[in-house]
Image (cartoon, rainbow, N blue to C red; front, top):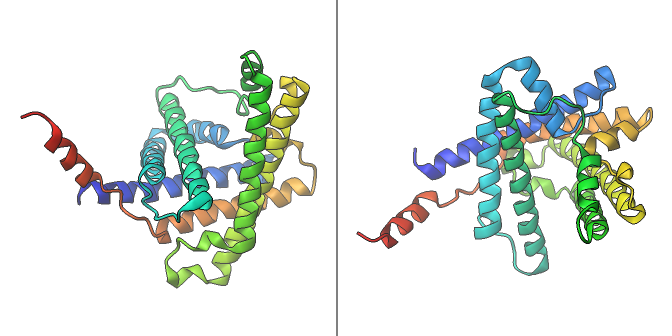
Length: 266
């Protein structure tokens, strides 16, 4: 198996790791009423399942992050030209960075130096941003970006565009489409709320108003918290479906390595 094929295999592991995180997030809400984001879900897994699962998830997150960054830089997925393709590649870059950050957090947990507190520290990060020159504008922009991401997720849910990258034998299965639609809709709502909290914190220059996924989930009242939790669980299941059936185009790792070696002085 060459380097490109190994990266593809580990990328599938990354989809599975993402799915597991969302299933943990949904489980905590449904069973204990505890609201967590992916970082908090990693801490829960680290405290209850041992290091081997985290090692596998870390490898998956690194591969997934590199694959998404490669897509942004090299257009591995063949995005169309124009603004739509540019938005998709920017989104791929952002997703890659987020998953590499999750890998870094998992490594810290493996080393025993990760945070044990609940939540994602959105208020602390907002306070840091507000202390910077133009921090208020940064928070406003970050909030608007998250709102845009949330709307994009809702559009994907409405148009079933999440099925475009699945193998044809499952892409049109009703249960797959239902799972993906509910999952992306729930995820979109969470992003919208998180973006609203950030934008509000920027507009009012109050870090206490900021919030991420954990704060958005904690803000929901019954029965909406249950409905959204079920949706996030379905997104986790859809991520597992992607781990098996997503069409993943290989990153030309071997070709790039050969080209780099050929340019080195002999």
